[in-house]
Length: 233
Image (cartoon, rainbow, N blue to C red; front, top):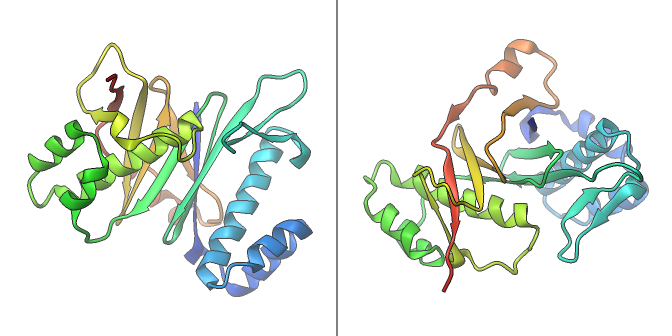
């Protein structure tokens, strides 16, 4: 099972952020203070606190964090299979995903942009699909593709070394596919999680004490599951 944990920077008071910052290791506190904007600091604090929670979940220490050659981090516990996680943030949301397998996640705030112009960074198949969308569907579908591509690249752990035109997404079920994407709409945001095969995903929150408040963020609108297809030239 894949576990996705949502945090929102609006859920905490200034006093609570001050307390959370003091829980961080000295180097992490210094890193947070390098951000000039308050919201960047808030996202940084929640990202770090979430990472501490992930480590605790696996009974791991910060020294057990390792990176592949492109900088993607994973947890290496001696004598055990590597544990995987990924982090993404945008606007108000900070997302942590935890898995026994390789995983990637991306969340993006939907903004009014030149969708077709920016889709020039996508594969031809993605662009063709967007041209067939109704105007009312375009924002959601553009950001679904965008977050899916980002999540796939993060799943691969290749950083910026993967051309977004070298693969495309499809809603068709394919026997031969590189990965599976599951996406959700969180208000004005799209969240996508990438795994090799389709797995059950449990979404929960960090930072909400009231069950009634927490539940409004669980079971959000799930978009269509899609497959990732690599293009071979």
